[in-house]
Amino acid sequence: MKKKELLYLLALQKAKGIGPINAKKLIAHTGSAEAIFSQKKSVLEKINGIGRFTIQDLHNTENLKNAEKELNYILSHNIRYTSFLDDDYPQKLQHCIDGPILLFHDGTIHYEKQPIISIVGTRKMTSYGRNFVEKLIDGIKEYNPIIVSGFAYGIDIEAHKAAIQNKLQTIAVLANGIDKIYPKVHQKYVHQVLENGGFYTEHWHNEEPLREHFLNRNRIVAGISDATIIIESADKGGSLVTAGIANSYDRDVFAVPGRTTDLNSQGCNNLIRTNRAALLNSAKDLVYMLNWDQKENSKKVIQRQLFVDLKGDKKIIYDYLLENGKTLLDSISLACKIPIYKISGILVNLELQGFVRPLPGKLFEVI
Image 1: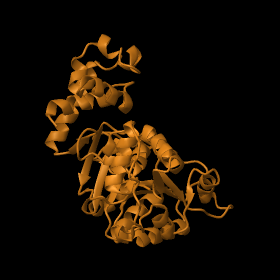
Image 2: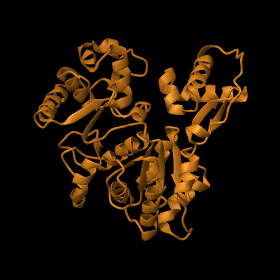
Image 3: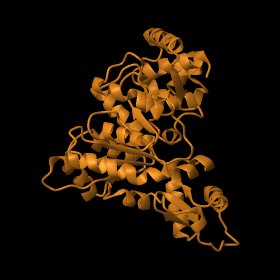
Image 4: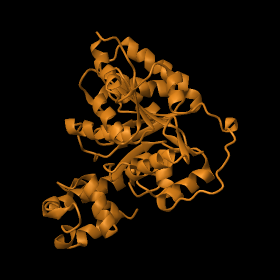
Protein backbone atom coordinates (compact mmCIF):
# COMPACT_ATOMS: atom_id res chain seq x y z
CA MET A 1 0.00 0.00 0.00
CA LYS A 2 1.29 3.46 -0.88
CA LYS A 3 1.96 5.89 1.95
CA LYS A 4 -0.54 8.36 0.54
CA GLU A 5 -3.34 5.80 0.51
CA LEU A 6 -2.51 4.81 4.09
CA LEU A 7 -2.65 8.50 5.09
CA TYR A 8 -6.16 8.90 3.69
CA LEU A 9 -7.32 5.59 5.17
CA LEU A 10 -6.19 6.87 8.57
CA ALA A 11 -8.05 10.16 8.03
CA LEU A 12 -11.13 8.29 6.88
CA GLN A 13 -10.93 6.04 9.92
CA LYS A 14 -11.17 9.04 12.25
CA ALA A 15 -13.77 11.12 10.38
CA LYS A 16 -16.82 11.41 12.63
CA GLY A 17 -20.02 9.94 11.26
CA ILE A 18 -18.32 7.72 8.68
CA GLY A 19 -17.54 4.36 10.29
CA PRO A 20 -16.32 1.23 8.48
CA ILE A 21 -19.56 0.53 6.59
CA ASN A 22 -19.80 3.99 5.00
CA ALA A 23 -16.02 4.10 4.50
CA LYS A 24 -16.17 0.93 2.40
CA LYS A 25 -19.15 2.29 0.49
CA LEU A 26 -17.27 5.50 -0.31
CA ILE A 27 -14.15 3.60 -1.41
CA ALA A 28 -16.25 1.32 -3.61
CA HIS A 29 -17.74 4.33 -5.42
CA THR A 30 -14.57 6.41 -5.76
CA GLY A 31 -11.93 3.69 -6.13
CA SER A 32 -9.66 4.60 -3.20
CA ALA A 33 -9.47 6.47 0.10
CA GLU A 34 -7.37 9.18 -1.55
CA ALA A 35 -10.02 9.68 -4.25
CA ILE A 36 -12.69 10.30 -1.61
CA PHE A 37 -10.89 13.37 -0.31
CA SER A 38 -10.43 14.82 -3.79
CA GLN A 39 -14.07 14.30 -4.75
CA LYS A 40 -16.65 17.07 -4.43
CA LYS A 41 -19.03 16.88 -1.48
CA SER A 42 -21.98 17.30 -3.81
CA VAL A 43 -20.99 14.07 -5.57
CA LEU A 44 -20.30 12.08 -2.39
CA GLU A 45 -23.56 12.99 -0.68
CA LYS A 46 -25.53 11.61 -3.62
CA ILE A 47 -24.12 8.10 -3.06
CA ASN A 48 -26.89 5.81 -1.90
CA GLY A 49 -26.95 5.68 1.91
CA ILE A 50 -24.43 8.48 2.45
CA GLY A 51 -26.02 11.95 2.44
CA ARG A 52 -24.82 15.35 3.63
CA PHE A 53 -24.87 14.57 7.36
CA THR A 54 -22.59 11.54 7.00
CA ILE A 55 -19.76 13.42 5.28
CA GLN A 56 -19.98 16.73 7.15
CA ASP A 57 -16.77 16.00 9.10
CA LEU A 58 -14.93 14.35 6.22
CA HIS A 59 -12.87 17.38 5.18
CA ASN A 60 -12.07 18.55 8.70
CA THR A 61 -8.40 19.58 8.44
CA GLU A 62 -7.69 18.15 11.91
CA ASN A 63 -8.37 14.66 10.57
CA LEU A 64 -5.56 14.90 8.05
CA LYS A 65 -3.19 16.56 10.53
CA ASN A 66 -3.75 13.76 13.06
CA ALA A 67 -3.47 11.15 10.30
CA GLU A 68 -0.09 12.57 9.28
CA LYS A 69 1.16 12.29 12.88
CA GLU A 70 -0.03 8.69 13.11
CA LEU A 71 1.50 7.85 9.74
CA ASN A 72 4.87 9.19 10.92
CA TYR A 73 4.61 7.06 14.07
CA ILE A 74 3.73 3.97 12.04
CA LEU A 75 6.67 4.45 9.69
CA SER A 76 9.21 5.37 12.37
CA HIS A 77 8.24 2.43 14.62
CA ASN A 78 7.79 -0.12 11.81
CA ILE A 79 4.18 -0.80 12.79
CA ARG A 80 2.65 -3.43 10.50
CA TYR A 81 -0.79 -2.80 9.06
CA THR A 82 -3.28 -4.20 6.59
CA SER A 83 -6.40 -2.79 4.95
CA PHE A 84 -9.63 -4.65 4.19
CA LEU A 85 -8.57 -4.79 0.53
CA ASP A 86 -5.21 -6.47 1.18
CA ASP A 87 -4.45 -10.17 0.79
CA ASP A 88 -3.11 -10.48 4.34
CA TYR A 89 -6.28 -9.08 5.91
CA PRO A 90 -8.10 -11.86 7.85
CA GLN A 91 -10.25 -13.56 5.20
CA LYS A 92 -13.31 -14.20 7.34
CA LEU A 93 -13.31 -10.62 8.58
CA GLN A 94 -13.53 -9.46 4.96
CA HIS A 95 -17.05 -10.94 4.87
CA CYS A 96 -18.15 -8.68 7.76
CA ILE A 97 -19.64 -5.46 6.47
CA ASP A 98 -18.58 -3.56 9.59
CA GLY A 99 -15.06 -5.03 9.76
CA PRO A 100 -12.28 -2.43 10.29
CA ILE A 101 -10.91 -0.71 7.20
CA LEU A 102 -7.46 -0.84 8.84
CA LEU A 103 -5.87 -3.33 11.22
CA PHE A 104 -2.52 -2.96 12.96
CA HIS A 105 -0.73 -6.15 13.95
CA ASP A 106 2.37 -7.60 15.52
CA GLY A 107 3.76 -11.10 15.92
CA THR A 108 3.92 -14.20 13.73
CA ILE A 109 0.32 -14.57 12.59
CA HIS A 110 -0.15 -16.86 9.60
CA TYR A 111 -3.11 -18.71 8.12
CA GLU A 112 -2.76 -22.14 6.51
CA LYS A 113 -6.38 -23.23 6.12
CA GLN A 114 -6.58 -23.92 9.85
CA PRO A 115 -9.87 -23.64 11.72
CA ILE A 116 -10.14 -20.45 13.76
CA ILE A 117 -11.98 -20.52 17.10
CA SER A 118 -12.80 -17.61 19.42
CA ILE A 119 -13.07 -18.37 23.11
CA VAL A 120 -14.47 -15.70 25.42
CA GLY A 121 -16.13 -15.52 28.81
CA THR A 122 -16.29 -13.91 32.21
CA ARG A 123 -13.40 -12.06 33.78
CA LYS A 124 -14.39 -13.62 37.12
CA MET A 125 -13.47 -17.13 36.08
CA THR A 126 -14.07 -20.09 38.38
CA SER A 127 -12.16 -23.36 38.53
CA TYR A 128 -14.98 -24.89 36.44
CA GLY A 129 -14.32 -22.40 33.64
CA ARG A 130 -10.55 -22.80 33.84
CA ASN A 131 -10.73 -26.58 33.70
CA PHE A 132 -13.11 -26.50 30.74
CA VAL A 133 -10.81 -24.19 28.76
CA GLU A 134 -7.81 -26.41 29.43
CA LYS A 135 -9.62 -29.66 28.53
CA LEU A 136 -11.26 -28.14 25.45
CA ILE A 137 -8.05 -26.86 23.90
CA ASP A 138 -6.16 -30.03 24.80
CA GLY A 139 -8.96 -32.03 23.16
CA ILE A 140 -8.86 -30.12 19.85
CA LYS A 141 -5.11 -29.56 19.51
CA GLU A 142 -4.73 -32.35 16.94
CA TYR A 143 -6.81 -30.26 14.52
CA ASN A 144 -4.34 -27.36 14.89
CA PRO A 145 -6.89 -24.55 15.39
CA ILE A 146 -5.98 -20.90 15.86
CA ILE A 147 -7.34 -19.67 19.22
CA VAL A 148 -8.63 -16.09 19.33
CA SER A 149 -9.59 -14.06 22.39
CA GLY A 150 -9.47 -10.56 23.87
CA PHE A 151 -6.43 -10.77 26.21
CA ALA A 152 -8.63 -9.76 29.16
CA TYR A 153 -8.80 -11.22 32.67
CA GLY A 154 -10.38 -14.61 33.24
CA ILE A 155 -11.43 -16.87 30.38
CA ASP A 156 -9.69 -14.75 27.72
CA ILE A 157 -6.17 -15.00 29.08
CA GLU A 158 -6.73 -18.62 30.08
CA ALA A 159 -7.56 -19.43 26.43
CA HIS A 160 -4.36 -17.75 25.25
CA LYS A 161 -2.29 -19.59 27.88
CA ALA A 162 -3.82 -22.97 27.04
CA ALA A 163 -3.18 -22.41 23.32
CA ILE A 164 0.47 -21.60 24.00
CA GLN A 165 0.77 -24.62 26.33
CA ASN A 166 -0.51 -26.84 23.52
CA LYS A 167 1.75 -25.18 20.91
CA LEU A 168 -1.18 -23.67 19.03
CA GLN A 169 -1.29 -20.30 17.36
CA THR A 170 -3.19 -17.67 19.34
CA ILE A 171 -4.41 -14.20 18.37
CA ALA A 172 -5.15 -11.50 20.94
CA VAL A 173 -7.44 -8.68 19.81
CA LEU A 174 -6.80 -5.44 21.72
CA ALA A 175 -9.19 -2.62 22.63
CA ASN A 176 -6.36 -0.06 22.57
CA GLY A 177 -3.28 0.92 20.59
CA ILE A 178 -0.69 -1.69 19.59
CA ASP A 179 1.87 0.02 21.85
CA LYS A 180 -0.16 -0.55 25.03
CA ILE A 181 -0.98 -3.67 26.99
CA TYR A 182 -4.15 -3.81 29.05
CA PRO A 183 -4.37 -5.06 31.69
CA LYS A 184 -0.75 -4.33 32.55
CA VAL A 185 -0.43 -7.51 34.59
CA HIS A 186 -0.67 -9.46 31.31
CA GLN A 187 2.54 -7.90 30.04
CA LYS A 188 4.28 -11.11 31.11
CA TYR A 189 2.40 -13.06 28.42
CA VAL A 190 3.19 -10.71 25.52
CA HIS A 191 6.40 -12.43 24.42
CA GLN A 192 4.75 -15.86 24.33
CA VAL A 193 1.81 -14.56 22.29
CA LEU A 194 4.17 -12.88 19.82
CA GLU A 195 6.06 -16.16 19.38
CA ASN A 196 2.89 -18.23 19.00
CA GLY A 197 0.67 -15.84 17.03
CA GLY A 198 0.26 -12.15 17.68
CA PHE A 199 -1.92 -9.12 18.27
CA TYR A 200 -4.53 -7.26 16.23
CA THR A 201 -6.08 -3.86 16.88
CA GLU A 202 -7.85 -1.20 14.87
CA HIS A 203 -6.79 1.56 17.26
CA TRP A 204 -4.01 4.12 16.91
CA HIS A 205 -0.90 3.92 19.06
CA ASN A 206 -1.98 6.42 21.72
CA GLU A 207 -5.54 5.20 22.23
CA GLU A 208 -6.70 4.03 25.65
CA PRO A 209 -8.95 1.00 26.30
CA LEU A 210 -12.24 2.89 26.52
CA ARG A 211 -15.59 1.15 27.06
CA GLU A 212 -16.70 1.59 23.44
CA HIS A 213 -13.38 0.17 22.25
CA PHE A 214 -14.11 -3.13 23.99
CA LEU A 215 -17.46 -3.36 22.20
CA ASN A 216 -15.74 -2.67 18.87
CA ARG A 217 -13.09 -5.26 19.67
CA ASN A 218 -15.78 -7.90 20.15
CA ARG A 219 -16.84 -7.72 16.50
CA ILE A 220 -13.28 -8.49 15.41
CA VAL A 221 -13.08 -11.45 17.80
CA ALA A 222 -16.36 -12.79 16.38
CA GLY A 223 -15.69 -11.88 12.76
CA ILE A 224 -12.24 -13.39 12.45
CA SER A 225 -13.40 -16.87 13.50
CA ASP A 226 -15.34 -19.89 12.25
CA ALA A 227 -17.04 -20.22 15.61
CA THR A 228 -17.32 -18.45 18.96
CA ILE A 229 -17.40 -20.32 22.27
CA ILE A 230 -18.76 -18.73 25.45
CA ILE A 231 -17.37 -20.26 28.65
CA GLU A 232 -18.94 -18.80 31.81
CA SER A 233 -20.92 -15.57 31.49
CA ALA A 234 -23.32 -13.73 33.75
CA ASP A 235 -26.70 -12.65 32.38
CA LYS A 236 -25.09 -9.46 31.04
CA GLY A 237 -21.61 -8.77 29.70
CA GLY A 238 -19.28 -8.45 26.76
CA SER A 239 -19.25 -12.19 26.05
CA LEU A 240 -22.97 -12.12 25.27
CA VAL A 241 -22.40 -9.15 22.97
CA THR A 242 -19.74 -11.18 21.15
CA ALA A 243 -22.18 -14.09 20.83
CA GLY A 244 -24.81 -11.76 19.37
CA ILE A 245 -22.35 -10.37 16.84
CA ALA A 246 -21.22 -13.85 15.84
CA ASN A 247 -24.86 -14.82 15.27
CA SER A 248 -25.37 -11.72 13.11
CA TYR A 249 -22.39 -12.84 11.00
CA ASP A 250 -24.01 -16.28 10.59
CA ARG A 251 -21.16 -17.97 12.46
CA ASP A 252 -21.48 -20.95 14.78
CA VAL A 253 -21.91 -20.05 18.46
CA PHE A 254 -21.46 -22.50 21.35
CA ALA A 255 -22.05 -22.06 25.07
CA VAL A 256 -20.92 -24.20 27.98
CA PRO A 257 -23.84 -24.96 30.34
CA GLY A 258 -23.64 -24.66 34.09
CA ARG A 259 -25.77 -25.06 37.20
CA THR A 260 -28.87 -22.88 37.28
CA THR A 261 -27.75 -21.44 40.62
CA ASP A 262 -24.36 -20.26 39.31
CA LEU A 263 -24.30 -16.56 38.40
CA ASN A 264 -21.44 -17.18 35.95
CA SER A 265 -23.56 -19.69 34.03
CA GLN A 266 -26.74 -17.66 33.63
CA GLY A 267 -25.65 -16.04 30.37
CA CYS A 268 -24.55 -19.33 28.82
CA ASN A 269 -27.70 -21.14 29.94
CA ASN A 270 -29.87 -18.37 28.47
CA LEU A 271 -28.03 -18.52 25.14
CA ILE A 272 -28.72 -22.24 24.95
CA ARG A 273 -32.33 -21.90 26.14
CA THR A 274 -33.13 -19.28 23.49
CA ASN A 275 -31.36 -21.20 20.69
CA ARG A 276 -28.73 -18.51 20.24
CA ALA A 277 -25.96 -21.00 20.97
CA ALA A 278 -25.46 -24.74 20.69
CA LEU A 279 -24.78 -26.64 23.90
CA LEU A 280 -21.11 -27.58 24.29
CA ASN A 281 -20.20 -30.32 26.75
CA SER A 282 -16.77 -31.34 25.48
CA ALA A 283 -14.16 -31.07 22.75
CA LYS A 284 -15.86 -34.01 21.00
CA ASP A 285 -19.04 -31.93 20.63
CA LEU A 286 -17.09 -29.15 18.94
CA VAL A 287 -15.27 -31.53 16.59
CA TYR A 288 -18.57 -33.12 15.55
CA MET A 289 -20.56 -29.89 15.15
CA LEU A 290 -17.83 -28.24 13.08
CA ASN A 291 -17.33 -31.37 10.98
CA TRP A 292 -13.63 -31.72 11.75
CA ASP A 293 -13.77 -35.47 12.14
CA GLN A 294 -14.74 -36.21 8.52
CA LYS A 295 -11.63 -37.32 6.66
CA GLU A 296 -11.14 -36.91 2.95
CA ASN A 297 -10.59 -40.63 2.49
CA SER A 298 -13.92 -41.47 4.09
CA LYS A 299 -16.04 -39.62 1.53
CA LYS A 300 -18.98 -41.54 0.18
CA VAL A 301 -19.23 -42.04 -3.55
CA ILE A 302 -21.97 -39.73 -4.73
CA GLN A 303 -23.87 -40.38 -7.95
CA ARG A 304 -23.76 -37.09 -9.81
CA GLN A 305 -26.81 -35.90 -11.66
CA LEU A 306 -25.96 -35.88 -15.35
CA PHE A 307 -28.41 -33.20 -16.43
CA VAL A 308 -28.93 -30.26 -14.09
CA ASP A 309 -30.97 -27.38 -15.44
CA LEU A 310 -29.84 -24.38 -13.41
CA LYS A 311 -29.19 -20.78 -14.32
CA GLY A 312 -27.52 -17.69 -12.92
CA ASP A 313 -26.11 -17.77 -9.40
CA LYS A 314 -27.60 -21.22 -8.75
CA LYS A 315 -25.56 -22.69 -11.58
CA ILE A 316 -22.40 -20.87 -10.46
CA ILE A 317 -22.74 -22.27 -6.93
CA TYR A 318 -23.69 -25.77 -8.07
CA ASP A 319 -20.78 -25.97 -10.54
CA TYR A 320 -18.35 -24.74 -7.88
CA LEU A 321 -19.49 -27.38 -5.35
CA LEU A 322 -19.47 -30.06 -8.04
CA GLU A 323 -15.82 -29.31 -8.77
CA ASN A 324 -14.58 -28.66 -5.24
CA GLY A 325 -16.62 -31.00 -3.04
CA LYS A 326 -17.79 -30.04 0.45
CA THR A 327 -17.04 -26.38 1.11
CA LEU A 328 -17.63 -23.82 3.86
CA LEU A 329 -20.36 -21.23 3.35
CA ASP A 330 -17.84 -18.37 3.61
CA SER A 331 -15.55 -20.00 1.05
CA ILE A 332 -18.42 -20.50 -1.41
CA SER A 333 -19.33 -16.83 -1.04
CA LEU A 334 -15.75 -15.70 -1.60
CA ALA A 335 -15.05 -17.99 -4.56
CA CYS A 336 -18.37 -17.32 -6.32
CA LYS A 337 -18.31 -13.58 -5.49
CA ILE A 338 -21.84 -13.71 -4.09
CA PRO A 339 -22.58 -12.00 -0.72
CA ILE A 340 -23.40 -14.17 2.30
CA TYR A 341 -26.91 -12.77 2.75
CA LYS A 342 -27.76 -13.77 -0.83
CA ILE A 343 -25.95 -17.09 -0.99
CA SER A 344 -27.73 -18.49 2.09
CA GLY A 345 -31.12 -18.24 0.39
CA ILE A 346 -29.81 -19.75 -2.84
CA LEU A 347 -28.37 -22.75 -0.99
CA VAL A 348 -31.71 -23.32 0.76
CA ASN A 349 -33.42 -23.37 -2.64
CA LEU A 350 -30.82 -25.78 -4.04
CA GLU A 351 -31.33 -28.01 -0.99
CA LEU A 352 -35.11 -28.02 -1.47
CA GLN A 353 -34.59 -28.92 -5.12
CA GLY A 354 -32.40 -31.85 -4.07
CA PHE A 355 -29.17 -30.56 -5.63
CA VAL A 356 -27.09 -29.86 -2.48
CA ARG A 357 -27.15 -30.80 1.17
CA PRO A 358 -25.85 -29.06 4.31
CA LEU A 359 -23.31 -30.67 6.63
CA PRO A 360 -22.33 -29.80 10.21
CA GLY A 361 -20.08 -26.75 10.51
CA LYS A 362 -21.77 -24.71 7.72
CA LEU A 363 -20.41 -27.00 5.01
CA PHE A 364 -22.30 -27.83 1.82
CA GLU A 365 -21.86 -30.46 -0.87
CA VAL A 366 -23.53 -31.58 -4.07
CA ILE A 367 -25.86 -34.60 -3.85
